[in-house]
Length: 421
Ligand SMILES: *Cc1c(COP(=O)(O)O)cnc(C)c1O
Ligand SMILES: [Zn+2]
Image (cartoon, rainbow, N blue to C red; front, side):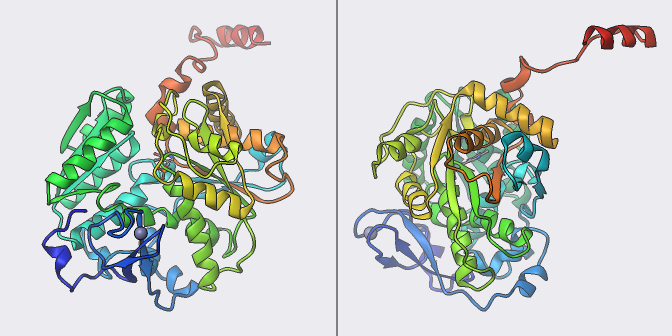
């Protein structure tokens, strides 16, 4: 519960954000760099007084998440400060994947198109804008990889120092694609949950350090709403009937749900019913397990999966994920590492989209939930593809390669093609 000097002044401009409110007891506290309720230690989230927002006012905005700035906890002049411009990634009609999965209408939201190639650019852009207003000067995070990329890049663009903590076992590509932006990168001996604990300690010791997903988490988390907003806008201002979201901490899933609900309440879409489905890797599936067992609390696990970007064994938003999934009538599934690889290849071969392991989790889990009759094959479904396959090449490195190596003659090609049957 760090309070910076700036945070104590009353002149904060965080747009439509009115206060922080406790997700457990509802207690409201003034906007500040706080993340735990002073009454009950429950997690805080942003409460708003939204201005009048119309489809037209949104469409008149930029081709980035800042078109939704009137619905985000960011200063009204957010665009005048250097930041990344994530969002408005493509939503593609995935007919070939739909046929392969046996469903009628399927869309892929391709968030590999963000500045550092994952959806984390959305949350970091919002966190940076809020952190600047709250008086911070250093952008920090504990990360399973994609967040590290996004924080280091956003800090570089803003001219801020960054401090990024990662488990030392992280994929080489994600280390490199963080380090290239400069800043301080600390590889910590331990898993993500150890790294996260260390970050919480450091946040309390360094007043000027904004750990995007720790001490400014309430603001950061709101960035994920833009995924829900965009899907609805890109579908022609309506909600899908079903959506499949990968789960790490669970924040994204709860905010996609919040985004859909807000759009309905604001009259931007008809508030039609929708179901939210969650996807995990079996090697780190504490939320799926709690769902299956009918529990409200999530029992932490020690992650062991190739889907490292989802490998959070003690997911902070687990209980809220269970609420959202149960309330909307969805389900949560999980898949083995081999199924994750199958999912990556299926998406690439049917739609030309190369996803990282988290995308493989989403596709493979969708397949399983369809086969199990949980996802309705006749209802429209959106799959969130949240990260780029170039970051996790190892996942499929043993499975794909040249069809043949041939001499540079048409005869050799002919022979190779014949040999292929
Ligand atoms: C972080 C991450 C997620 C999930 O995020 P949470 O909000 O923590 O559940 C999903 N996909 C990718 C690629 C990620 O990096
Ligand atoms: Zn509380």
